[in-house]
Structure formats: structure tokens, C-alpha cells
Length: 231
Image 1 (tube, one colour):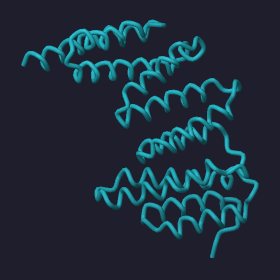
Image 2 (tube, helix red, strand yellow):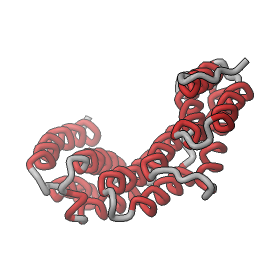
Image 3 (cartoon, helix red, strand yellow):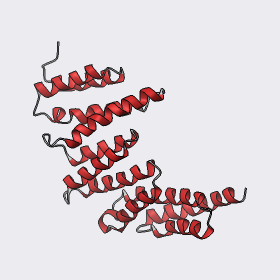
Image 4 (cartoon, helix red, strand yellow):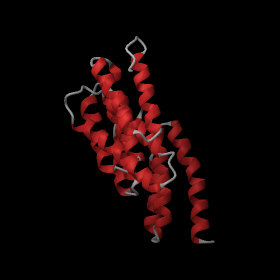
């Protein structure tokens, strides 16, 4: 018997979460389908699919067995793919950002990019906070799959935008630039190119916080450099 009272929406969501943690995807989907059927106009119903996908990927992060983890990731990615392709539900731009961030965890880089692109397109100029988070998400996706050049390109574009680089989230971009510069510097044998990677850190100072991050990075960079090339 399914609930029908005023707390029913929360109960359906809770049931779905419980079934997800028990690896019972059929029951989890069934609970959300009932939610969508009984309360089609509710916000909970409209975001049922991304909620399920996010729960699956979060659950996968706790699974030790790699084969089981990959299977759950795939299930979550498939649900997000359905969400991204669909135009029948009016998802909010931030919903696509959440999707992209979860898909990075699931290592589905291409679908993550599609989610971030959709977030940026839907947000337009109405929500720079969402656009900023999506653009950094695209850089994180490249970074996670070790495409450091691609990640830097996205981060440089972010920092060149006066509105985006003035936001508090710009410190996340600064931190990523530092991390990428350190990785590229360690991987580069040519001293001139290596120094060019490290010098990039000095160019990320649009505000006081980024300057602080850059200065702290200098000590880490040269300490790591000395340890790596002069053990």
C-alpha cells in the first residue's frame, strides 16, 4: 500500500533512497513513478529522475567492488542521459549542474559536458552563479580525465571573463590552475616549458584571495620541483 497523505511526497522520496542503497533499482524507480503519478505537478515529481540518478552515483561511491560500482554508475548515467535528452520536463539550470557534477564522479565525461552545456544555455544571463559553477564543472571534467590542457583552456576562459572572475567561486578556478601547473611542471622534462607552467600561477591574481593562493603555491611548486628533479 502506498501513502496518499500530505507527507506522501517525502515518503516516496525516502522509499526510493532506501531501495537505492539496497541495490533494488526496480523498487526505487517504482516509488518515484508512483510519486510522479500521484503528484505530477509537484517539484518532487519533476526532479524525480535526477534525484534517483544522483542517489545511485552517491551510492556507487560507497561500493568497494569495482564491477558493481561500474554497473551502478552506468545506471545513474543512463538516467541522467534520459533527463538531458528530455524537453518534456522544465528542469532548472542548477539541476543540470548537479547532473554534471555527479557524472564526473561516474566518469562519464562526455555526458557531464552535455549537462554543463545545457545548464549554461538555460541559465543564459539570468544566473551567473549557475553559469560560473557549470564552467568550472567543465574544467573539472577535463581535469578528472587528465586532459590538463583542455582544463586550463576552460579555466583561462573563466578567468578572462570579468564578471565570472570577480565571483567568490573564482578561487576554485585559481586552486585548479595551481594544481594543474604543478602536475604539468612535474611531467615536463624541458626546463623552459616546465618554468612556463609554473609561471602561469603568477598570472591568476584578479583579487587578494587568488594572490594568496598563488603565493602559497610558489613554495609548494619549487619544493616539489627540487624533490622531483634533485632527489
